[in-house]
Image (cartoon, rainbow, N blue to C red; front, side, top):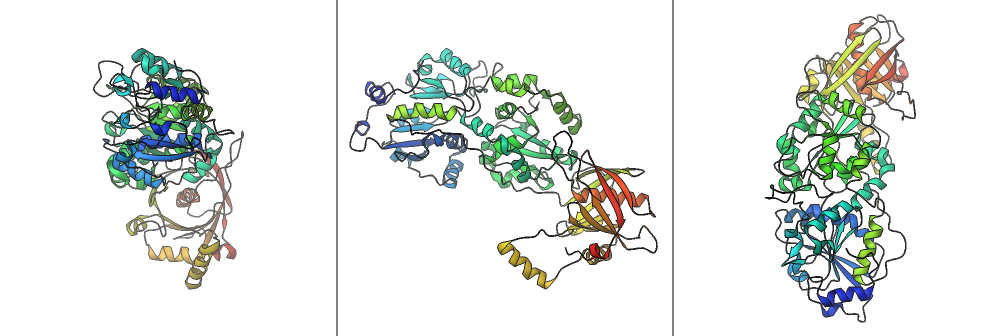
Length: 601
């Protein structure tokens, strides 16, 4: 096995002079006037590989002696998307013909495929993903792990890499069984991507706020690439989840392999998933956002792709959606995770399966399984830096090299333009369940939002609501001031207008604030009194250390609408117990005042 760093500058030159790196020494490698300056070339074969490399680049952060360059390795079906990704991060690229001529001191890659042996200089090979769980293509008769097979790691019998960085000792042992010569150049450093995810744990609530999750369960659907993937075998699952899961209790996100994005493009992928994106499905982009979704998630549905191991490392409940095939290696960590995970059934209701998995999950189950794939947690960049600087012949840059937390996701969170509300009314208790109108269950009443729903949805709605604009600052405030000078509605005037404009509407409501609404009925539920009803909504109780959760006021309005339909002449004030998304809230109905009627929207 390779010695632990530091190797020292003399060891680096000795390796190159004896040719054990598999490459001829270059004159430029000898110490000279600029011996303190080094160039690191990142060899990118796909967007997937680039994402892995970007998680590792902080090992050289802040060091003026190290200059990064990128090059696109030829031969990949996903090279075009990789080039676009490089441009997106502002990377300085070197054409491949120039890269093979040299001028760099270290090569870093995250895929062993392609003509990497043409690049002069020592090569550091990082893992392509979380562990080595899939067989090498066209080797279904054995357990040859893609990324550990000698066919990928040797060139003319010589190890391709000067350092093969691994995430777990079991991977090193597997490599030693397959290719002792490669194992001599391997070292366990950990997983930089996992460390970024774990470092982002304290940002979970910020991520959920940015995603618009609220008090809902966030269900992440994870799909790998290829004919055995979840999207290939169950292409309609995201659509089914957004249609059948109650909208106020669940949010659904899709984490698709970067190759899916590269192959289809986001436009075609959204078209294929329709109407799920229009019904609220979050589509995470393949760099950083997918990991932020896993941090924010409450439960994960997965095939045999190794991404779910990152969810297990955070101790999230996992439901397996893989029915078996030829790709998964039986003794791999991912196979172990699936063997212990709950099993998805296409015949059972989605919400029942998710709740059963969450309830059955025992704290620590996931992290114990993930420990079979990830070692050196929290130390990967420190260990990788020591190895890389030893190969460069430099002392490591002083100071710690912590994992960078993930940025707050900025996924465009679409919501359904209209919903169907099913309400169960018993006395003064109402339970509200809403689903997207397109694909949801039949029955109940249609809920439309002014300025958001389509004309046909407005015409078919029993309840129409309008949300007051939020106060703005800066340039937006100036724009609002111009708009307000032209036209504006009050709660009283708009509710009267909506009922007159849409004869099929029974209730028009103005959402003034998260805890306050005003509604007008087509037939007032009381005689000789005010024409408006004030709706006050209390936040759900925060018991047992739970955060305060406010339901969507529009969901509460559906409960009030149905209760007034069942009680055409109530005596106000009255208090209702309303259940939205499984959470009870208290709702006070009272006669509307002149102040609430004059509130501006």
